[in-house]
Length: 202
Image (cartoon, rainbow, N blue to C red):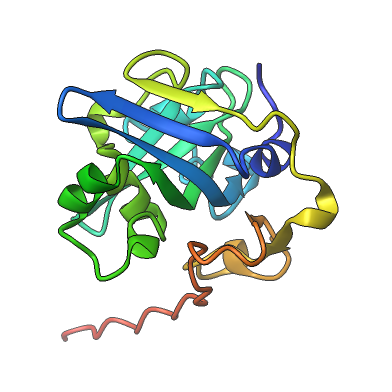
């Protein structure tokens, strides 16, 4: 069922995402997310239209959009817009509640278990998600998304600007990051740094 990303984002707080494979199962409790509204949103990968890279972001709802970034990391989004209309929620951070040893092995043994899924790239790595899971059904093996029995109420979560976005998409006008206060796994907010202008060689 399709849901506006801004409404879907807080519903994912406290949800459990599990990836079960032969080498071990890992479950992450989601503590931080960001909403992206497709062609209406300058921070979205779909802002300039549909491409081969962002095709999965256009639906159907309840699937994954997984993308590769900075030439080294994968990040995972829950697709939630109407089929054919882009919309998604980036899984920014969470707590590994099952399969810690497997998550540690994938992450290369971070100093603290709180860092296993703190940040979108770490979360995807801890769960073993890469482009093979782009378009995968979140409610079918080997994945399982379990929403909380009772949604987190508006007064029990915090909102703020999205992380790492320059330009209007990362401004205070887009307080589309949602997180559970007091959770040690929530990533630290860092505003985007403007890119240095390239030198033109004459």
